[in-house]
Image 1 (cartoon, rainbow, N blue to C red):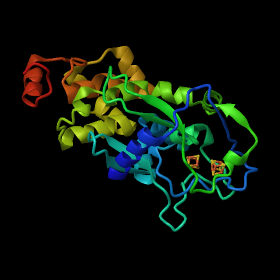
Image 2 (tube, helix red, strand yellow):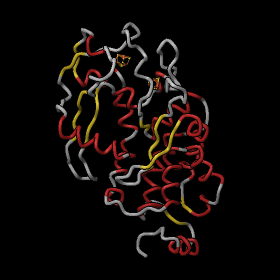
Image 3 (cartoon, rainbow, N blue to C red):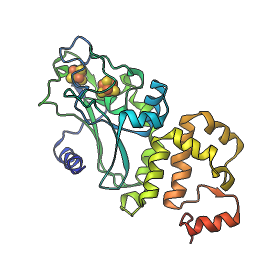
Image 4 (cartoon, rainbow, N blue to C red):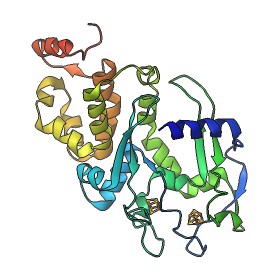
Length: 278
Ligand code: SF4
Ligand code: SF4
């Protein structure tokens, strides 16, 4: 991940900042000679919402998806568990979803990073409330075969993002992004292996997290109202929202976002270091 940090630094230092109404020339369609060539040998970080969409597109569980298609890592800067889309292991190192004719087989559910390209998003934010600097830039593909920049199609950054439905993906990841800017993570406080694993499961392995919530003693230990429980049984987006706005904030940062049912259990939770004021 050191390379990732160096890349980020280089972007913040050297890239031309683009605003929503700035224009650039680009088009990508089956008629370009390079069509589908970029869907290989590339690092694509998946957000929790990406995983949710992709595993549902494949109609498999998140546990199966992660095993088959993802490569888990943790960021050095703040220990965040992240996942990379796994490329095939042969020489071509292709994305498992690209067909021989360059078509993405999960196009409607392709990840955020695939939607954004050739626009990149850089941020120097280091926490909630830090206005930092956030800007778009054109991903420098001068060393690749991308012919999309040669197409006679001028459009604004906003027009590109709207055409790719980036806004939906941004909105669905908002709570998660806020969560990752929590001071506890930004200040690099030690989380410990157990909490990092819990973080990974609750964000990326939603079907595994659902089992924990519904099939363990979780609901005996914590107050969760019936309406929410019903939602959590079938609604992946509600489950992800619950994971990042309630459960993980309680379990990782000791915020009062969950209510413990029983005083005795609360005592044992405190002894595990799960509560705020011990
Ligand atoms: S998910 Fe689709 S668009 Fe993204 S790299 Fe794979 S084939 Fe290409
Ligand atoms: S290399 Fe560029 S133009 Fe070619 S398919 Fe990929 S994004 Fe489109």
